[in-house]
Length: 170
Image (cartoon, rainbow, N blue to C red; front, side, top):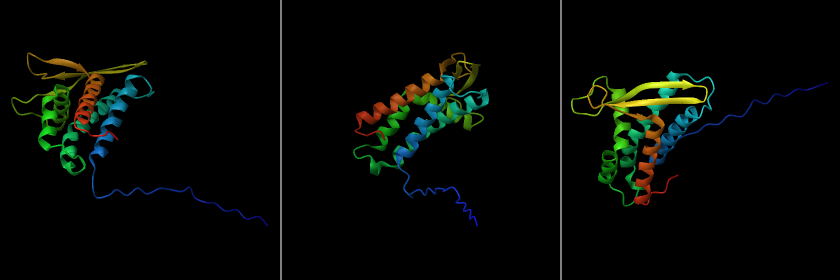
């Protein structure tokens, strides 16, 4: 007699705490940055322009939300004030552009006088993708920035803020 036992593959259940620490959002910002860097380096075969654009938009949205997550978790950021966080987000030109991309994506039409920014073009090649973001596209003074350069600068801006405020990056 032969007996066969089949054991199912084990699974995992992750339950989050009620508290939502700021570093959860920071990890999403870094992950979204890394996903842009992957397509720029050509390490994601078969990815199309729509996916590349979604990665850029996601980074900008996650980066834009970082301010709210830091403000919402001041209890875990001793010595850091909400006004210092808001000042960083509003004084950093690159963080402003990232927020403009997020808000321009979220809202069809922005209020007059607010910065607009969107993906203007996405170049796809075997060696990798390149995305151009156009700032204030409807004006005579429209300017362009590369999406990965923007993402790098945004990370650097937040990291500089962390360092100057004694925040240890997870």
